[in-house]
Amino acid sequence: MKPAIVLDRDGVINEDSDAYIRRVEEWIPLPGSIEAIAALSKAGWPIYVATNQSGLARAYYGLSELTAMHDKLRTLVHALGGQIEDIVFCPHRPEDACDCRKPLPGLLDQLSARHGRLQGGYMVGDSRRDLEAGLARGLQPILVLTGKGRLTQSRLADEAELPHLRIYADLAAFARELLQTEGA
Image 1 (cartoon, rainbow, N blue to C red):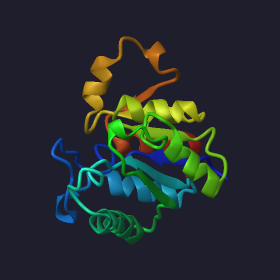
Image 2 (spheres, one colour):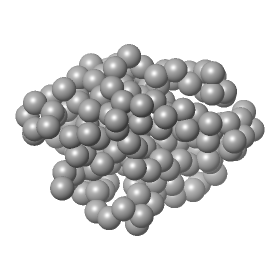
Image 3 (cartoon, helix red, strand yellow):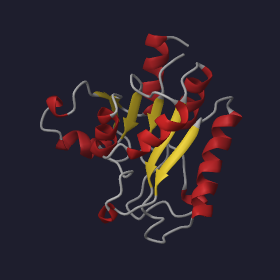
Image 4 (spheres, rainbow, N blue to C red):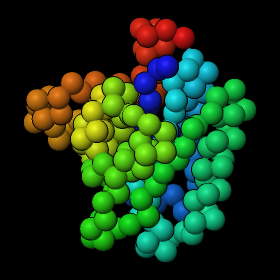
């Protein structure tokens, strides 16, 4: 069995917005992201999504709208023959001091409790907090330069800050390399 791939959502799979993605119509996949997820899934990698969604606590959108966004994601991936095993989210604001908001690894702990060991897999994100959560649970950090990825890259003093960090233009580039090097 291939190791898990855990994806952040906004800025990795879909367009990000500092004003928050509030409606399903605003949830727009990044070019190649849906195809990448489907290809990885069909090749045997279990795909999970772990996303901070403080817009819920801020009342920018409700649970039904968030569910509709995730249903849209699942439907698009399924239409290409892939699947997303699970989606977990933190509904809290940063000041709520929860244990699930990345960079804390609570969302990854939820996935691990439901699906087994994640260690040895990949954490793909566009922010430092995504990568730190993954490192805390033994996942290989993958930075994509979409979303806030370029800003994140520019703020890294050196690569020693995030051990074994690998950087890709986008999720599709990561998927292409993984499929080429580790087989379909």
